Length: 399
Image (cartoon, rainbow, N blue to C red; front, side):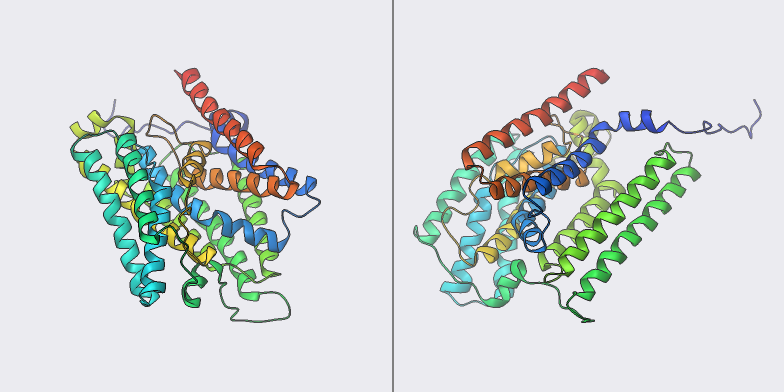
């Protein structure tokens, strides 16, 4: 063999059918979300996608999506966090005491609340990472501790209202810099620019894959996926533009989703988290500081739970002792429905976001139809069980 011999990339790529079958979970959840939205749009006589309800849908699920980003990293690392709902309630109570009871300006109060969230995550992560106490036990204790602290901080009463500036974090909308007629022009333009930028980014990534002879999705699937994504974003953006425009919290969500997608897919720390969850011993032997990485995933979760607590409190315009109850179940369910594996090492940011909106659309649609909370819980439980069963079945089939 000559010195300049190179290994040629295999001619042709996988067929659309085989590729779709291989990535059934990834595309299946996206198609499921679309199907669920179409179903509820029909049975609610068009109520689901009305601009007002669509805005409410975003506001109602913003804190779940934000926490799902942090929970995904915790689950991928092979752990779980049951305390996030209690942290949401505690941080909301702390914000109310600082802003309402003591009259502190909302900016330093917000910073303090985020730092407290980081400290909570650090405390729990320290026990998990360095003392090797199972995360289930540590965060279960945290769930009880911070639920009790929030009750003590509020003295069993609700505190509010919050300053108007703070309320805009959840209930505000971006300003219209180019007002034309009844449509929120700035929101509409952003809804066009964002998908165009995403398509260009995807094309660039595909060209890089071709350059390095990396397996890529068939051209038909690539084109279809980008066309559907562009249509959905522009259409939903148009609907929101006919109401009040894009909510502030939606911009926060988009920035966080972009950041965590970049971290998990392009940064070394993201790849190390997947390695940690896939095989902790192998990761440690390869030189990864697994303790520090576990610690940082919990610190990150604490910050995002605190941010979600601030958004939830701003939306309610009051802090209540029952805030955040069962949020941890919705967040964990969103991650598992979106494709995260209970054994760690598997999961994607986009999947967690899709899972969160699957839960959100189901909640919203069933509420519009008048389905009782009892049957809502039953249906959501069955959906979660089916998603985890599907994941385990596919992994067993692959082996």
